[in-house]
Length: 116
Figure 1 (cartoon, rainbow, N blue to C red):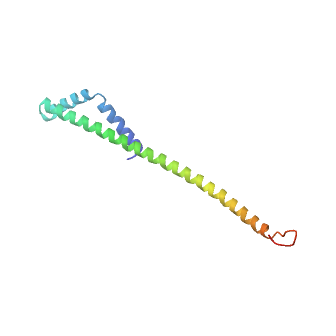
Figure 2 (figure 1 turned 180 degrees about the vertical axis):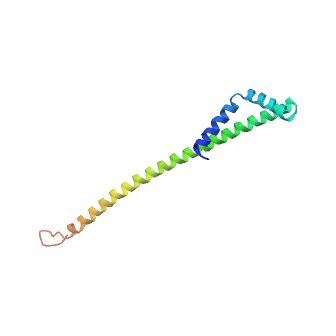
Figure 3 (figure 1 turned 30 degrees about the vertical axis):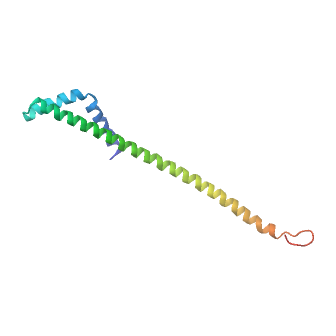
């Protein structure tokens, strides 16, 4: 889900369930007015709806947290890879430098004319 849309939906859900009693009361009244049902049924349905909205809000919060964590993990992994690349390049330069010096050392002769 789009990050901005997720945030907006979580905010709206938080506002909707912030005052649970008022929400249930208003939903019960709307239920009674539109369906002609009794107020008790409307309140039960309002409580169920408030609980469902709260669960949805919690799920969206977990989703946003998981997405944020995965983005942080990717950043940390990329930084670690970059550090490894730098170390490998440095090690490669050292190996090349040692390889260039090695043939010169092997061809040195001692004072008696012997090769080392």
